[in-house]
Image (cartoon, rainbow, N blue to C red; front, top):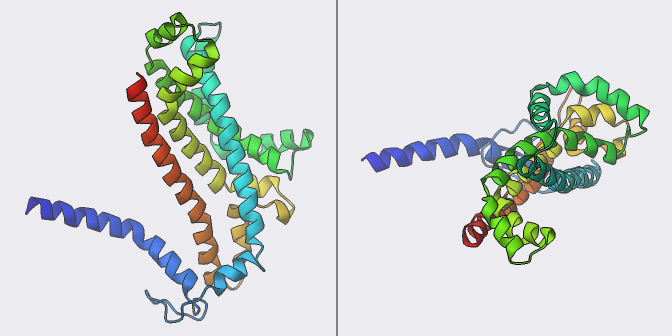
Length: 269
């Protein structure tokens, strides 16, 4: 009886969580989505909403822009955050504590308070309306969390493992690749997922920094299907479905790497 109650509770939570996703996909596949049809099962199954979004709506361009920005943010953020985490965890230098405090302070600043200063700075550096400039901004916002998280993973690795590698004749690069990197891989994957989601879903900076619609990301490109007096709900839901798919794929791949990292760390440790 108790197990049945838990099962019903889990089923209720899953249903509550997944129902909006189901409704989004159903509406995207419904040929009568803009004719007042609000059924839970489409009477007219069609892919015309997806064809319109990718073709006439130009959403394929927005998807490629977001992928470039998000992957650039993830790769650069993973490298810089890992090196910074190793520096603050393994080395003692002046102002080390001040650096960690500054990392925390940056996390506390509201995003809205930085829009205008960053806009002026990007304009001065001629980085407005460029995907590189947008990726740099996202990198700046994802790095503090990544550094602070990876610092805990690096600090948890016993120094004796590194010393043993040195005694066996390994160089610093070999020790980094064979000992430290496998053990901190779970944290690296976790921070990469966070960086990807930040870069993929962000709206304010993408809207403020981009004036050319060819450089729009998916979050900004979704607006074009909302009219002043009417909304193309079929296109909106089709675009929303396309936005969701890369995030799901990235999370599934990252989850597998996260598990592999945990196993590798346990074996090599």
